[in-house]
Length: 367
Image (cartoon, rainbow, N blue to C red; front, side):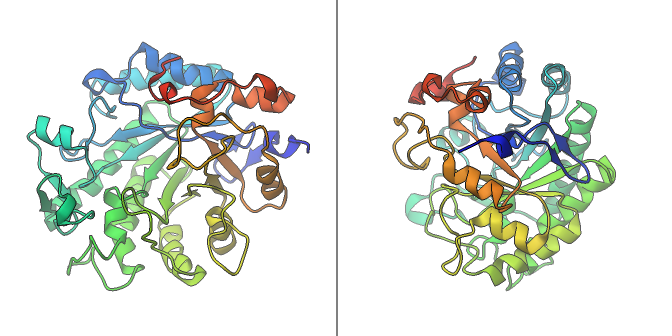
């Protein structure tokens, strides 16, 4: 099967890319003191040299003190801005584009980080979503004032991303982190304007973040929104039981200013609902009419919750078939690009036999 569609140009109203391959955001905890290093510059440059059309960075914490939840994760303010300018410059020298993923972990933080940092963990209603039996740390309920301050913190991060030379931002609204905690009725039991009985009402926090970011970056700067139908540690919980639920979720976010949706799934070949073969990105494009990014174990034999010791699979035929049917527009590749920075070029040339295998040490590899 030809891979031409994967390497065709992508054009939307605000973003043009040389091909359809996106480097998925992957937390690496390799920024001592929260500042990207020269090794970070090399890491992103290699993937740009390898032919990735758009790189989405690892999650970058905003300037709210409770934003971080893992050690050595980068920030997007102060001294870090100069470091990020080196990263974006290196990617642009290779002729590719890069987006900053902006992140607040909420109550979903590591136990070690909580013990080492005297910073309260927060969530919409002071509820730790894995339940009391697995409570890792105390969680504070966000006051209305704190919630509004976090919205402005996201907006400052968006402005800083534009200043640092990024071509877009991605808001991390997936996987049980803070924005996603506002979507979920189990963690959002607020009675103010950021709560509500319906999923549509519980998108208000995300809506206001989107609008605040838009005010900072202007009308022509692309905003990507990442969401999921699963959560870390709660994989069986689904926000959307049907396409109707998904429509109620997407409509207010689209109106608030999303340009591209990034629908995070564990395997992109898994249908999202019983009545269709469409995956989550496919349904999102059908409902919203916006470009979508699909993701989920591209180039790997198993989904990422399963064994991390499998080598990349040579077959990407199902992905090509879905792209050719216009189910979604872009595909994010994660661990395959950790293993081999030149994965894209090797796929384009058909050099599958020389793709480097994925192994667990790729998670900390800096090359």
